[in-house]
Image (cartoon, rainbow, N blue to C red):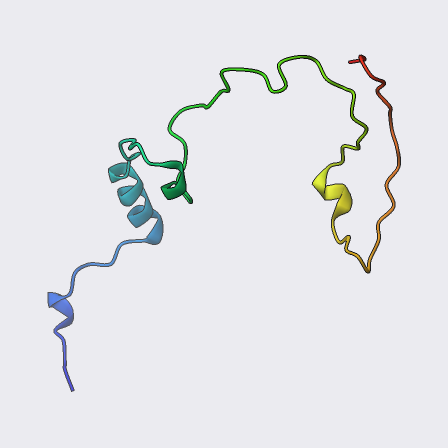
Length: 94
């Protein structure tokens, strides 16, 4: 059995003070360039923007629906949810 001299142990500090000390010393890492396949789990250092629109023209020729993910929470093949149509946009309309 090991015994310790209580006077020889370092002084404990409150968690808040420890957190403050660590966060003062922490900072963002320098950005690095990675192939896209190696970037899983990384955070972008800069915004990314497409050079060209895709498609390159206004296109509302396709039928479809837009929903918020929260509106489909709990939905599955077995458990359906009902969605309400709140608007329609025809071809060429904004």
